[in-house]
Image 1 (cartoon, rainbow, N blue to C red):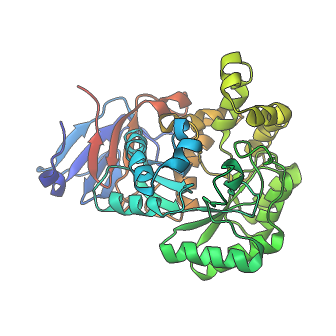
Image 2: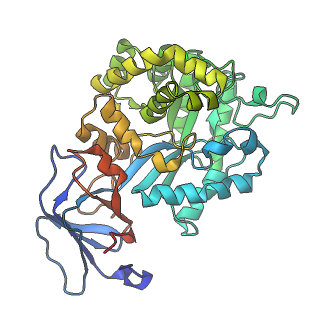
Amino acid sequence: MTIAEPELDRPIALRADAAFDGDGPALLGPTQILVLAGRIVAIGPEVDVPEEAIRLDLGDRTLAPGLIDAHVHCEMTPERLLETFFAESSVLKALYAVKPMRTLLYQGFTTVRDCASLDPGFGTLDLRLAQQRGLIEGPKMIVCPHMLSATGGHGDFAALRPGLGQEEYVCVADGVDGVQLAVRRQARAGADWIKLAASGGFAGSGNDDPEHVTYTERELRAAVETAADLGLHVAVHCYGDEAVRRSVVAGARSIEHASLASDDTLELARNTGTYILPTMHFIQDRLRALDDPERARAMPPHMRVRFERYRDRLLDRQQAIVTSGVRIALGSDAGPFPHADNWREFEALVAAGASPLQALRAGTSVAADLLELPDRGRLREGDTADIVAFDGDPLLDISVLGRVEFVMQAGRILREPVA
């Protein structure tokens, strides 16, 4: 059945044979959850269910908090990443995000952090507002509108558009004063987070190496301190060890990728409580592509060369991140690859040595803590009723995360099992 809008004022009682509460070391047994007005009002083996409640028995499925992907790019799709993307208007870019947002939601991701658009406008902030007002279906959005980049850095795309002038498709900012001004402009527009690029990457221009360091520690610290003055946190894109180290020392709350970080830098991140979002699926998938001649030929030559050069270190460092004790939050980097595959970040974490429990926490309670969302990422009385259910036990088989059969967002049932 589908719950009509007028029925949302009625209590909804969910039941399943198992549940993951977001924190526990194991699944709970048979669990009932009572939802009213978008909140969990009771949870336990048995709860008092009002006579007028709508009852839904999910049988042998596993209930869990709504999933959280803390690194996506809603406006990007794989077939239009650069040349096509740059030729589109800001409005068209935002419209392209509508389908991926719905895909993410119906896969059980009830909250995402959008980690920057390549468009000079602020379309992702409009998408956040459209979702809040119910104009479009999608996850709750936490938004980093743009990625601040040094001239010639990972977010300076002028070099990719020869003959078309020096358009800067992200916020190019140099020096302490320039970085502070860019942070303030992002905050003025309504940013939830600030994002910077402190190193090169794998998918940028031919001169953009993952170990290039593009911001000084002073510039990074200026960004963190300016953002803090405005009540915001900073996420930093960085692959190379020195860029990760500088970002951690400067006080960044989250490090995106950290794929070549040394043991010493990972220990520093653990000691400071810095969150790392290692975006492992994208890397593992590209490394597999190197062994597939057709996929390898389709990869931009500079990207293929970089992945070949760093292959062994990338695999070694993924395992090091998992065993380092750092706080790992789930971030898929979906956009450069299909949003429908973002759940595979859970599989990638497990492939790198994480336990299924560690992976599941990364995409629920740990991600909620990163984003400072105390009413999400867990199943507790009083929390927002973002609830999903899987066909199977994710602690025995992490692939069940790709088989979400029930989705509730803020008490509204969006997807339920086919009878």
